[in-house]
Length: 144
Image (cartoon, rainbow, N blue to C red; front, side, top):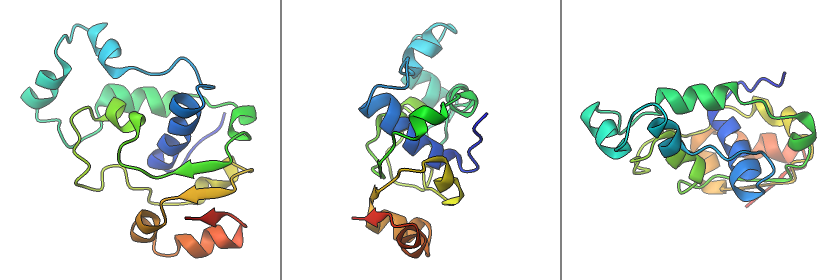
């Protein structure tokens, strides 16, 4: 079982495999997931329960439990940090991108993506993890 230490790093990997490459299937759809649990209006549910600035428990549980096979992890050659990722909308459907909810806190999970060659999001990365550029450079991973 592959265990990620940083949930937000895992979300970057999920974004790449599930929503960009479509190789990690089926794609998680929070609205459908919540409909199956009797929540018809997800936005109202989020606002009524003051969950605007949090990852919904249902999404966190799904993504934390999600197994990503080593064969798929080996296909990840590029990761991108971007506030508009689909996976973020599946976790926090009314999130406005104005806080650090999805900031990566650690690069300890780099070993899980052994063929990573490029990390896009240099500015964001420098602000999330002060020594990130040095860590990535030491591993031969380009940053832009």
